[in-house]
Image (spheres, one colour):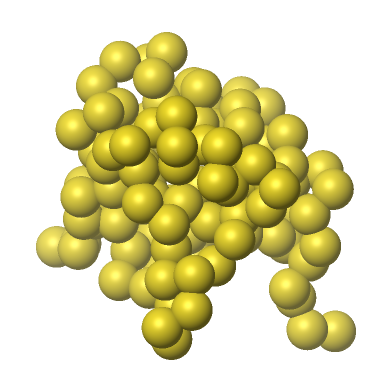
Length: 115
């Protein structure tokens, strides 16, 4: 039994696989994280997905999507990481919007992988 919704993870997996073959999966933060080119891209949590976006867009995205929340880690707001409630991802188009945004930023994102 997993701590995240398998069906949502399958939907994210399919969209990422259609876009790139450079996807790996890691269990972390109480969910499943999809890494693209060794960089965090999308995470599936029990009630939401975590999307890594361009940090310069964080405030605008949160303002335009009041259902979304910033990621807070160790008491610090993590610019460029937001949570999107699973309840707002019912259609393929809704999920594609966020996956596309995460993949667009992934090309310029810095890898956190330790060499």
